[in-house]
Amino acid sequence: MIQPSEPYVQTFKVTKVFRDFWRREKVAAVRELDLEVRPNEVLGLLGPNGSGKSTTIKMILGLLYPTRGFIRVFGKRPTDVSIKARIGFLPEESYLYPFLNAWETLDYYGRLFKQPRIQRRQRVEMLLDMVGLTQVAYRRVGEYSKGMQRRIGLAQALINDPDLLILDEPTSGLDPLGTRQVKDLIQQLGRRGKTIVLSSHLLSDVEDVCQRVAILYGGRLRACGEVNDLLSQHGLTQIIAEDLSPAALDKIRAIAAGEGKSVLDISAPRQKLESLFLQIVADAQRERIATGGAVDTGRLAPFLRGEGELEGPQVVEQLLAATNGDGAAAAAQPVAPVRPPVPLDAELLSELTDAAEHGDGRKVLEDRKAAPTKPAKPAPAPAPAADRRIIDSLMKDDQADHA
Ligand SMILES: Nc1ncnc2c1ncn2[C@@H]1O[C@H](COP(=O)(O)OP(=O)(O)O)[C@@H](O)[C@H]1O
Ligand SMILES: [Mg+2]
Image 1: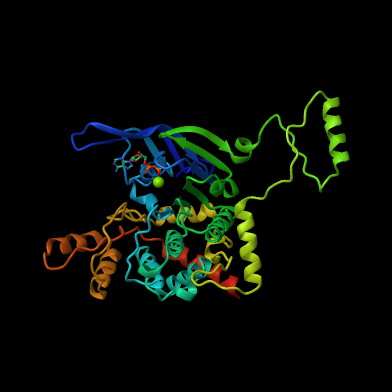
Image 2: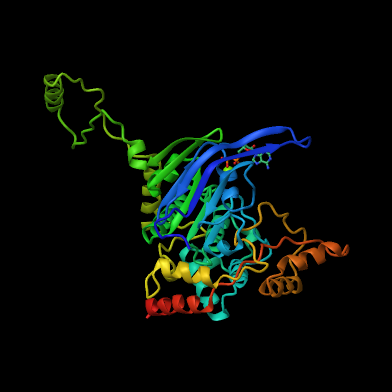
């Protein structure tokens, strides 16, 4: 059992080299990376495309092995099955079963965690409400826009109330409004003490929601620290005042000159384009100009609020104690499963879910692959069971919340 203050994730001089078919080194995607994720922080992995963010995340999840160096997640190897129930993952690309609707999708992932039916239903409803998809809950996710797919992916990553939430480019494909809503959600979860790692190639994504940021470029860590420290421009003073007269500006220049300093810039402050856009949308919404699709409820699912008798570390301990190791794999979705070429039939689904409940979801897939008549379907890896008592007590809080 690791101490509560110990980092949830530590990477030690981690390097990942991808090789070509002839085993020649092709790309060093990550180089000598030392990084830690501390409990209750929201850490941003910031870097341009190809800088190694997704590769780092996949190594933390145990989906890729480092070429050199090593990683500890909750004090264990990333491949250790006992930690999987504590992690939620939103992959860079949504891999959803296009013929399931949003409700069925979340219900399916809840089943993988062996959540009892009634609690599962409550949790699915709360998550759908939280990500603003209640109104489209019975539409097939294959028809969803990219933004709606991102939201359902986020809800899926939260179904097991994970201690560590890993989000790879959570705002990709979202318009500024959707981006703002997802950022608000991450912010709320962060304030509630969730530990979150999120990657992005956009500074604006991380600067509002992350306390700490790690900047990657060419697979190397170029800077790491508190956002405020990294962004404050030392050696400059900014004065923001109501519209001043030219005479007043001259006085300010004179004061600065008296101290031997020159005034570098005087201008009206510009708001960020993002804020302007959001302002326009907010105005339009007040005037009841509607667009279809997902809506923002601004509510956090009660079970994610972490209120009640079981405090974070206790839940962690119990979840860990409750995790059974046999045959269970990541809560994370597979890295790149092939989309099912034909509709997912109910029979296969129930077979898969039954098998998952017996910790053997993969076997059904193997059997299916072996049978030439029916094409193989991708199956998310089955996850270890969460302790029924914990879910019960979590749900007790939920009910109290509703009352
Ligand atoms: N499976 C792979 N095989 C070969 N090269 C890869 C593979 N995955 C990623 N890369 C390369 O590794 C580098 C880092 O990729 P990635 O981690 O996806 O970056 P980011 O997520 O920051 O955009 C890129 O140059 C990419 O082309
Ligand atoms: Mg990426």
